[in-house]
Image (cartoon, rainbow, N blue to C red; front, top):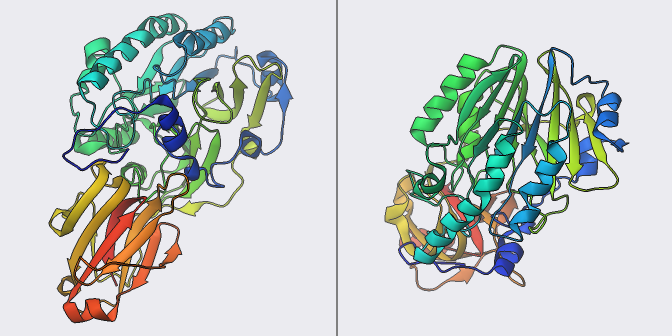
Length: 461
């Protein structure tokens, strides 16, 4: 699973993908904020039929100012039987009356373009990638006969550095992976989170422009990006930066939908100078992948430009549908949406991965993800204390655990990059702080080794 930056990655077995990565985000990532469906709905309201669910919401889908949208994610063609993925969804959507105004597929259509964070496909993977895209194509075509389909890509659909999305385009041609439109007054913006959650300058400009163009003050705005990573400062740390920039001073009923974690859950964030937003994750739509509520989809119900509620569905579930009225959604307090080291007056010097850190790196056995390292088996950096004018006495590493079974995330320190000793940092979320040892102060250098982790930045205090 781990590779040097310039080495050729190997393919992984389905068992390893499911057990070690959870198809792109390890099981350890299921924090209390990624809560179960029962917690998302706040109170269990069940309905035997979709029509009954609409009645519980007091929602008339046939009204002139009403409509529904259907969302799914992580269909992962290439795992399990193709006939068990979209066809059962199609069988449930076809008799809906009315059908959804559109169907959103929020990334991870397949699995082999990048088996795990930072993996570049070899020739065999590229061939398998196109096979998986072609496997999905007839089912995708059937789905488009039921309603317009708005799909985007996830970390398994492309790989770091694939700017032209060539593997996807070889099968799907010019099918768009970004979308911006209004449906009965409600704006929807779907962005491509790609392999690492980085939108890139061009897409970020488009995203900002569409928010300003489509959103009206105090109205509803629904956006979607595969990675539900608003608030993260290590993995996929480009997402909070993108959302912060696009939603600056934006007010209203704001949503960012994601897949990736294969679980239904909500997280609420407070935007500086703006409003609060809800980052809603949805479960996987493939019954063969890791997750609790899969295979599933979610129906969002709108009336007069407002979200009335959400209806969660597990395909084939005899218990029916679970209803989340909008007035009961996400009652928890909003978390401040801060960027790395923001509001830290004690920072004397800092550097982020992908932003000038290269000259300080010594050893790399980790997966390269453009602006963070994943699955670091042995990642070593050395920093001259003169960067902080020799005034620094503490050091911070931004990292999260990516430890396998029977392993732990570790942080080591050295004065010379040769003699290492393990540290026990003060940890506050993703911030891990150590005192700079006396021998490092004497040598004027601090070297750090990170193991079994994801890493995105460093600071001297």
